[in-house]
Length: 312
Image 1 (tube, one colour):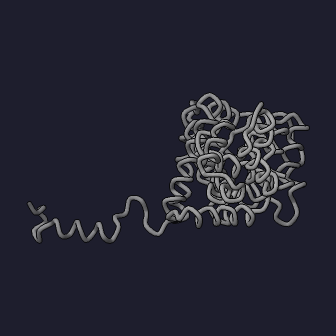
Image 2: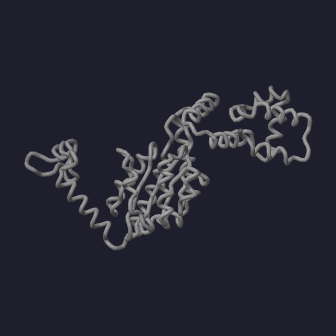
Image 3: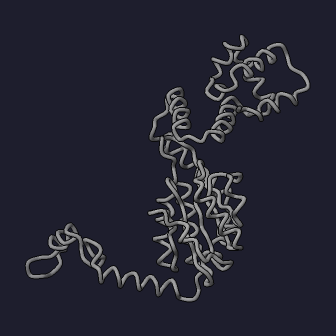
């Protein structure tokens, strides 16, 4: 059941007009679909004017009808576990509002980034980075399903700074990877709506062994937070069947930057040099960084005369 906050606000009202009572009755009858209603449908359904609906919405403490809809949809989304359900709501919303899909995605992403910036200050990022960069113990990284890609990226980038272990359950061997966890170890876990049980149980395992647990998630009240020592929050809006990870990636990039700045023992530089040596040894890239691209060769040849002198 959704809209509990809305009806709490209504119950706190000391007086309502006849028209407002009609609106409340309409809200109660259509509470499960209310987040998808527009001002016209509410006005017609409650048999009151649109002006009456607008005044009542403001009386409840909302700035305007747009803010009212955003609040209801946020509450509805927080109670939906299925990506398909969330996608259907967003699809209906975009169809109603006639928004351009590309611009809507860009605006939603910018909104997520701003929220993540507000929820994670420099002090929290620095604190997490110092724990991740500590010398003692082992560092484990974990993310399942949709969070695996970000976890893998973080692990790969992190290995240029310090050794790290990427946890997964390929072949059903996760339990073997969790042997001998101790208080000097650190787990960095990524868990988003749906909250994969294996990730939560792994966090609990580390917590029970007095190891530090840092969680990157989409809500300050997500279930796995109870097993974490530091919570980094990167909220996201669901615009497609696949949840956006832009804000999550921004937080990860911020942690990598902070870890680079906090490293003072030269270890990061040594590992970076070692990584470059291995890249050269295994001839990993199609074009080496010190080799001009074909287009660059063509430009260079055009800018040089036959006698070897540069053209003016």
